[in-house]
Image (cartoon, rainbow, N blue to C red):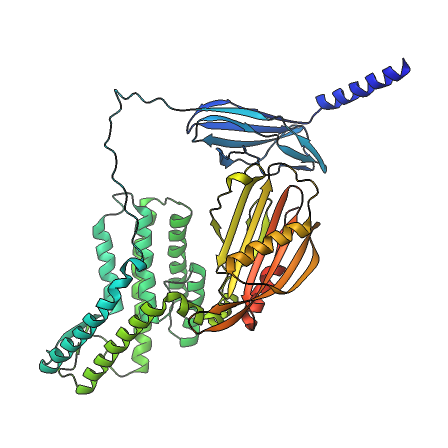
Length: 530
């Protein structure tokens, strides 16, 4: 009797614990039509040490997340809301969602979502004819055969031009140059005539207004005004003003900064100034042009004795073309034709491969990007943002693999190649083996590039508490153009468990120090989300 009582109390204790589950899930509806939205709400009866992991969707990936709203903090509880939709009819199950509270895992109930099609009344809905087959876009290979016809045509054209230039003399022509200040004032006048303010196109108006001012500053002061931000431009003008003693007043520079900042607010922060403020900025912009022009003009008058008060300058081109100039034209056309022929014969990839060292060096000099890829996330720093690749899971593996995402950059046969892959299993795998997984990956890569690996080295690597392996090896690929072997090296970071696999692959040319620096920087930046 006592023994049975213990069992009963034990079961009641578990029931009590089940009833005190601190997490719950609810939707405003579980039946929608295609394209309609569902509001999903997860409630946690705790406020401290709560983590909401990424929302787990249905296994068929038919339910989509439109927006993930911020967590609301209410009295003694937290609420996390999502907006969901679907564009495929059917019944889909949202699995149990995992919530972590004080390092303990709790699960919500699963939900069944019904998505119905929209009935179309063909008596009221206008019917349209079947669209014609869309043609496949043309590529360079489609016109490659025409290249050999283009070469003799260009040669013939070069000969004809030679005789035309030899028999005819160039007529005297006149080229007119307008001073930067006149060009800027004329553009301001044209801007007023467009009546953009009357059409409520304030953003376009400010874009053109600041472009006029920046173009004038770049032409008259020889500074990169069009490529600079507002702060960079003001700083450059201050430095230029002090070093060259232009005499631009601080008030003019202050007005320029205010106009550019107002334009930035309109273009990027969706600010909507009143009409009086816009007209004031227009007047200030014209004053800035005139004041700046006067300062530059005075400086030029002090340094030169030339007359720079003319608004239009005329230049006369040479009336005769010498025989040497004609020869240069013929040589240029011949070289151009030769380059086209060589590129058409060998292909663009060959010339791209010849510039490997320069490309690796440029990667180190330019800005790098830190991004997260896949699920679970892999955070990595790369010289270019990786592009997602479409991966079709074979039918015989769909019962094992739930999802696979791959992001990459470069080529396996090039100087640098980067690939990040995440694989999630439908069910947990039993007796998972690192050796088996690594051998399968190496075999796949070997078949893909058509090369055998040498000098294979494997070590244990731990990243954010996740145990994995780092594998390094060498391989050789033959360059069919120059008939020589190029040596490559690859580094593979492989992290796996019974639920998922995450792998990071980096390949490079051996002997290129810049490529070594790029590869090491990428590998050392890898950070896994536990």
